Image (cartoon, rainbow, N blue to C red; front, top):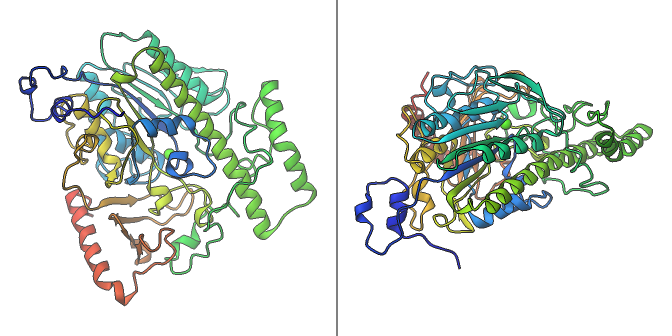
Amino acid sequence: MPYRAPVVLLLVAFGAACHSAAVPQGEPAPRRRPNIVFVLADDHAAHAIGAYGSRSARTPSIDRLAAEGQRFTNAFCGNAICAPARATLLTGRHSHAHGVVDNAAVFDPSLPTFPKALQQAGYQTALVGKWHLKSDPAGFGYWEVFPDQGQYYDPELRSPAGTRKVEGYASEVVTDLALEWLEERDPTQPFLLCLHHKAPHRSWEPGPKELALFRDELLPEPETLFDDYTTRSSGAAAQEMSVARHLSDYDLKLGRPVPKRPADLAEWRATYDSENAGLLASPLEGADRTRWNFQRYLKDYLRCVAGVDTSVGRVLEWLDSHGLAEDTLVIYASDQGFFLGEHGWYDKRWMYEEALRFPLILRWPGVIEPGTVDGHLVSGIDLAPTLCELAQAPALPGTQGTSLAPLLGPTPPATWRDAIYYRYFEYPEPHRVEPHFGVRTTSEKLIEFPRLSATEFYDLATDPHELHNLAASPEHSARVAQLRQRLAELRLQFDDVY
Ligand code: CA
């Protein structure tokens, strides 16, 4: 039977306006500050997780985390590319406020972040894997990160001691390093471990243990693989991120094999060589080639996801075997979502659902009811204030988010935010996605494209795939005006006014 934490215990645990003297006699002692394991995948769409409804993904360990914890179904990033979204998770600020508006910007290492706050509050802090913010990580007692995007096979890792090459597959290498650090940490103090995967980022190079997945299978296609972009602004058709036309031979594994070691190379060849030979012998065109590209792309993406899932399983087993599962908050998230053929696309960037939504699962036995599904509107700016509150660290200066701690208890608050804010900047390279900003409520979305003087409005309840832009519909003009006003308010609230 699930354990439901007493409200008073939760309040103490969350550092709310309640002190230990308020705990009635006979109640359990106040919960200690949790250890925190923050697993962050790169470009892992929520709809590529079994627990979020994927028909194809193999994610038993992430699904276990969801079954034992709380799964947020409406967690949305504020800018769907890597560096801005990551800086947002660290600082609790939107892109314009932390300054990393695109992937070219350098993160200001002097900004307040949750790892710094937790370190100052007595946590041992570690970061392994993807960083992607150009400046050196700050706030970590130990860090070892991939330079820039890093490599999948035999990756280089950068640390204060310099750069070294580690033999192996990236998702396994960072997991090994994370578990080594856990073994060597001081067990008397709480810890924050940031285990940040490269996978399943482009160019989706699966590990040797996952290469055999999906061979000779046909994965289901999304309904919008052949979207023609009617009713949308002109930007949707002008992008350069289509499965049909913009995947390179390298992306599609049509060039030289990546692995060097013989066993890895044999797995690689067994997966790709005969399919590639078949394509060469009988070239495909039009929709047939798009379908071939889609199968190759999605299988590789999901193979990379399976490698991340194996890593999650190893971490959960380590916590179990060391008696730490009860004392540890485990978070699984991605920096943003990704298109898995929807609208004919790979990549992210757009405010459309598949890129906007990111997976967010929290497990904390004794506090979070197992199997909780939470539909509150959550933003990437919320994670940093949440972790500061749960770790009983001081609030971060400049944070724009709201702590999710009240949502983790048995009685969620009666009121919550009605809308989230989004803004995408990076243009024209690398994918010619028009800059845009917008607002999403629980059931609607308004997007403004300032360079195009275009607006899009979607009723997500009746049009979940966002195929019918209703911005010009007289029937919806009043609602469009209201959402424009709400968007203007959000821009004022977050001081994103130019
Ligand atoms: Ca990313």
